[in-house]
Image (cartoon, rainbow, N blue to C red; front, side, top):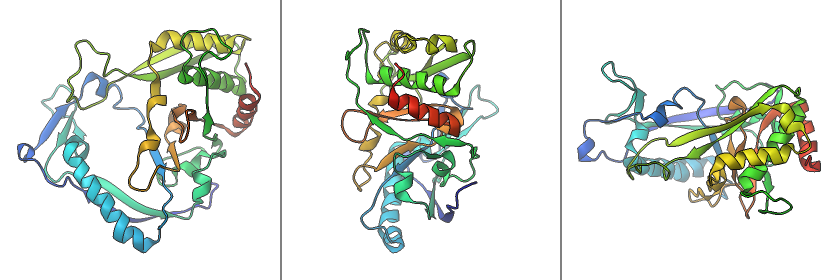
Length: 314
């Protein structure tokens, strides 16, 4: 680890639901659906929300902020009891289940760090390791660097003639082209890029409005690198994504910056698990109508990517 930043675990709390409704006084079980099982062994998505507090002394945090966090979490778990449970696979069951029993709890870890808040919540290129300061058990390759999260405003049908010119399609296609070029892939190297779509409003028969679980499906395009490296590579990628999307805007509709815990909007929201999955994260930007994205590349690839992205490769 190249950073001198340190994380000190101060305490670990176990937060239970504020009260257990009478109908769940013993236990609650939910079988995992097809949509749940397909993600069971995959890398969980990890987020960091950066909030800048006007009053952040240890005494204030422990006497005011932490009790409120625990209280709010306890009340929230009343409405989402399965989240306090555990995934298990009983011998007699055909599929794994989520099992909640009274006194099951969510673990809340309190830690402090000497890291630079402005640096971690900024938009500069930095080592991916620094995004895992609060998760020291996760291995991260030192040779990788995570790109700045950029705010980009894209306008439909500006200089293009394709049909579905959403910001998701344009940005994703552009970033894919930059990544392929920055890696210097051979012409015949296979490239696969895909995305997830929310299926909740697209199932027939419709899904129950009380459904608790995943409802995502993956779509992918695979090709050889030459298709993306050619002069019309960007238009090709946009066309393929347009054919797949079927009107799905994707994660650019998730307003993560609307997560207000009483401290206003976050200074920054980062998906820390992308260095484990080779994924590109995209969200609504903090301000305005743009889109933020982040990715992880090797240091030399990141330098080339930034040059390609800023200068334009299309």
